Structures are given as C-alpha cells and as structure tokens.
Image (cartoon, rainbow, N blue to C red; front, top):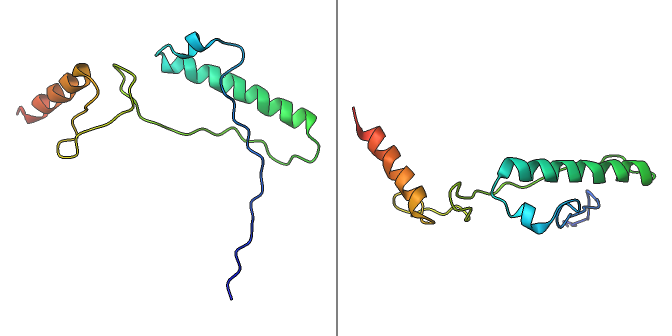
Length: 105
C-alpha cells in the first residue's frame, strides 16, 4: 500500500516590497535598478534570519522569472501562429524588423 507523507519542511518568507523604497520607485521600468533593490532587501532579511533564528540550517534567497515587454512593461504574450508580440506597436515593430533582417540574404 502506498502512503503519502509530508517532507521537505520549510518556512518561506515573501516580502511585499523593499521597505526602504516607495511603490513609485518600484514602478519605474528600470529592471536592473529594481533587481538591485530586491537583492539588497532579501539579502538583508536572510542575514537577519541567520542572526536571530536558532537551529536554522540554511537560508536561501530565491526568485521566480517572468517575461515582460521591454517597451511597455506588459506581461510578454505572443500570437500562437507567428510568435509575434501582442502587447504594443514598438514590440511588434522590433519583431517585424528582425524577421525582415533574417529574410535578407
């Protein structure tokens, strides 16, 4: 008989936003700046956990990836048939230009 058991017990923390900055700063579309803010903040929280929580073996900073348009900041979506972006004219123009460049000998 198969038995399902719980394993890999852990505590995960989610930070709403870096507390040292305002929402307006986060809404800037400069991804390198935003990544730096999040990295600094999560590293600081991890250091605090290591310092203050007894018996904590590992503290890992992890993140998820998502794709967004470099022009308008929308979630990256494409047409099923052509892979053409659907979010804005600038992204579509870049896609079309790349296709034109590829098709030229």
